[in-house]
Length: 222
Ligand code: DC
Image 1: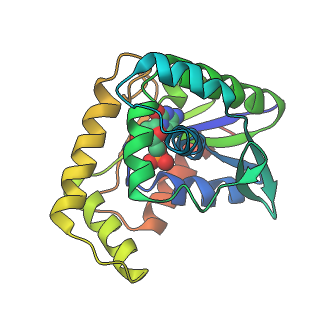
Image 2 (image 1 turned 135 degrees about the horizontal axis):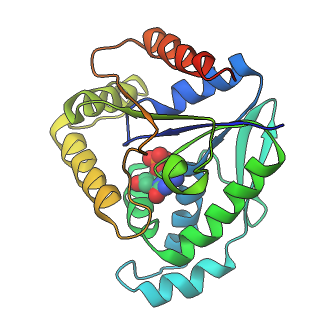
């Protein structure tokens, strides 16, 4: 029987790093649902959609065919047949995805895809509403978070390591804004599921978080 590990939390909490390593240790696939919302945002931007107009978003999003594939065990996301996995990792897309993901038509389409995946295979899935909405029966639920200042510093270090010039205060303000949007939207807002284990990674190293999550998973006898 297939099982699911659901990891939710705000941007920059370390979800994808942890979900990737935990899925490897468990020998199951890792599904990054944020990448699906990012691909949809890319599609809407390419179609010059007015992000303030819900009707336009609802109509245009129908034309996006988002699929995922696993190549060498790594998730690749395809938008109408084009591999957009690397194109979606920009600050512009982060901002756009936070707005467009609040729309019901966008969520319906992507939640359906996420549930179909989980019904066919065991997986670790991360996002904002996996434990609360997409997979309410997931065997393990984790709410992974960290202080906004810590998350901003992690993002700043990531970008500067890639040679990008950025401003820590701007990144932190952006993170706080996205948290507010993701947590206060009407549909499937980011929140801890009642049966999720809360893990604050502010003062933890990546290996410490990995150990903690694997301990939680083994307690659930996955
Ligand atoms: O995890 P991420 O930064 O790649 O997610 C991008 C945006 O997508 C984020 O602002 C909120 C949205 N999202 C969502 O609404 N539900 C999910 N399950 C995953 C992401």
